[in-house]
Image 1 (cartoon, rainbow, N blue to C red):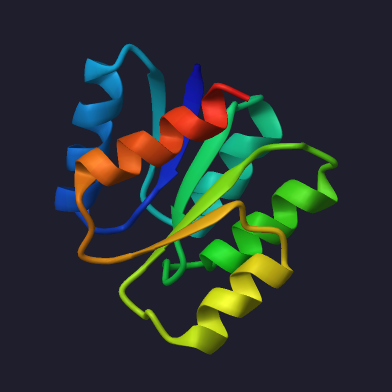
Image 2 (image 1 turned 90 degrees about the horizontal axis):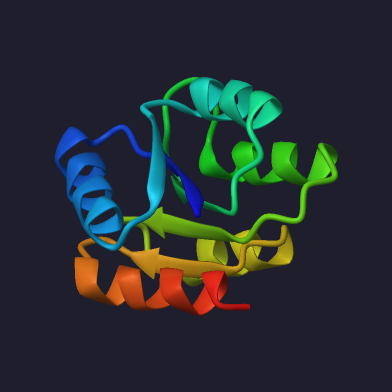
Amino acid sequence: MLILIAEDDELILKTIEHKLLKEGHEVILTRNGKEAIETLKEKDVDLAITDIMMPFASGIEILSAIQAMGKNVPVIMLSSMGQEEVVLNAFDLGASDFIVKPFSPSELMLRVRRFLSK
């Protein structure tokens, strides 16, 4: 499965990449929202994992871009802001799941497996 990761924190990006590669997935790394949106225009991914607070375009804008492209891609949102309003807004806009940072990489992999087995 091809998974897009949009994360500007290099440590988190590499941690997620390592776990996904270990489970046999292909991974595309993007370090800002604009890069993620451009990649999504060119590639069909099976799942997207995106931070909400990103340079150039937010995770919410990435989610909106996926919907505007008509792609049916599950999106797991990551954020250090666990505020109820942010979480509810992400779900209202179509996020499939939401994880508050810091998070357990094993928990993220469990959630990834759940979406990819559908």
